[in-house]
Amino acid sequence: MDLGNLASLKHFIPEMILVAGVLAIVLIDLVVRDKSRLGALALIAAAASLLAIGLEPALSGAWLFHRMLVFDSFAIYFRALIALAAVVAIWMSIGSEEVKICDQGEYYAILLASTFAMFLMAESANLLMAYLALEFVSLTSYILTGFLRHNRRSLEAALKYLIYGGVASGTMIYGMSWIFGITGSLDFSVINKALSAPGHLPVLAVFIALVLILTGMGYKVASVPFHMWAPDVYTGAPIPITTFLAIGSKAAGFALLTRFFFPAISHLAAGGSWTALAGVDWPQLLLFVCIITMSLGNLAALQQTNMKRLLAYSSIAQAGYALMGFVVLSNDGIRAMLFYLFAYYVMDAGAFLVVMIVANSTGREDVDAYRGLAWRGGIVPALALTIFLFSLTGIPLTVGFIGKFYLFAAVIRGQFYILAIVGILNSVVSLYYYLTPVRMMFFEQPRGDEGTVRFEAWNYGLMGVLACATIMFGLYWSPIISFANRSLNFFTGPT
Image (cartoon, rainbow, N blue to C red; front, side):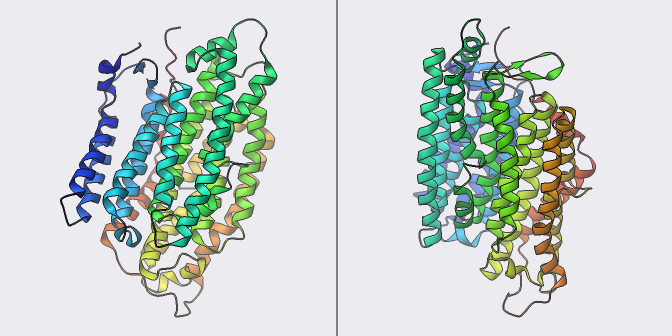
């Protein structure tokens, strides 16, 4: 089904709510003096968008706006995940001491605009739309990263982000121009048919184009060797924005990566397996990227003394784990990846929230600030952080364990035994640096200069929800895996 502009609007309601939220915040910011209300308005807009996604009419799939976007179950899953990321980021922003001294009207408007752009990334059905959406996300991310104008580290992070992003963006659009030259179209569905048509396929040219495109998409998910921006940006950005980039931007990147490399240039065969283009060995390339990403992320995290930087390298490693499901080339792998991205959202958002709670009270983000945390008024955040770190490691009875179980099961079923071994060894390595803060919080006495942790009802409420979700979905994960399973249907038009 190919819908025109007006007919597409009924499937574009969540995006229109975000746009309305942006306009409302900009206008209200001009007339109100109490800027704290703008955060509540942004939170309502993000929550309303999430609700609209849940209430969207059931439809097998459709092209929107004359084949620029696609509406299908895969897009619904990622829009819901991105909307959840926006809700958490805005909630954290309202309780953040860093954000309170910023221009809140601009901050929340840009945050909602970035969420809108991530929605477009997840729905893109055209290379031009994919590029514009990714650039929209990148530009808003640069601004949000450098929003602490009084903080030199924040400004430096934004500048590095801009430089890396510009190079990745230019490389990606060059690769897209190659695909356009080879196939004569920017439409994903037409590209698939052109590359599948009988006749001579310029294998080398297609492979080079895919490598160039992977540069831009790999930069967005922070996979090696496109990860260089992540540690500095995660460290310098406000903690709510670090969280938003770690979970929302990464989810949007994986959505675009999957939609391009699977329904656009691969073919679904019987039994739920996918077949790559003959002679174009991009799965082998991504297998190598996956192994290096998880290994470098975990090994680099061993040396970190700053919690935000430690979680940044952890985020790189988690991208490597998620890529395990990507390289299997099967629906089992995609389903495992979808579930793991949700698990990562819950546990990583919770970990960054505890980092923000400690930073609000002590003004510190280094690992030493957690020394004796359980004995200086922070027993609740200490227990919550322990749950989140155990889940990131993959300890049983947590959602992280279930996510890794599905990933390793898909990898072993696909007979990628070396990849499974490397993933298990990396999980063992990660246990060391995840346990370091736990040891310091419970088994080391405070020295007196760390400061006490005050109770913050607003942040503690969200922390409790995320901690409970980490345990609950580790014991009863059926709703999420069912949602992920329903999201494997890519709309590619009439067959």
